[in-house]
Amino acid sequence: MSERYMKVEKIEHGTVIDHIKAGMAFDVIRVLGLSNEMSMSILINSHSKKGGKKDILKIENVELSTEEASRVALVSPSATINIIANGDVVKKFNAEAPEVVEGILTCSNPNCISNQDEPVTSKFLLNPEHGHRYVCIYCERDIIDLARRIRR
Image 1 (cartoon, rainbow, N blue to C red):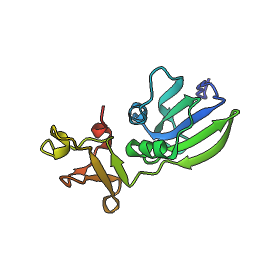
Image 2: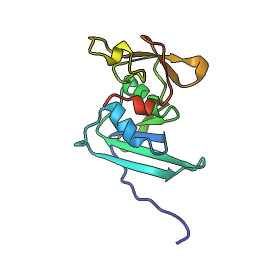
Image 3: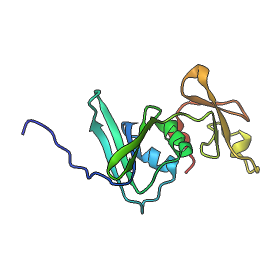
């Protein structure tokens, strides 16, 4: 057979996150706080018609909120969110990085007050001048590898 086929079941209700940066699907699951008890399909390093590789995540019976979709953009800013109802795409939009991120990321500065035993919630602001980077409001440290900084 000269063509490659991949069989993944269609979902009737839920969310399909497409165009996830290759190898980042598990980071998307973590940033969304999805339970491993949920019904989902994960495609890793799948062929993309646009060229290259991508991941795809199908989550049954879950419709992502705008806030949840913005979390996806933390690890994969080019992701597309598809909301599925009765087997059809009823809403499609791109994940957009939030301006402010609280309590999801950890600061890479070990001396930052947000990493000490203080009653402080981590907080980062998007720095549009430097692409997809966030800056800690406490120590002003630039966070480059967001996937590594997601709170576990």
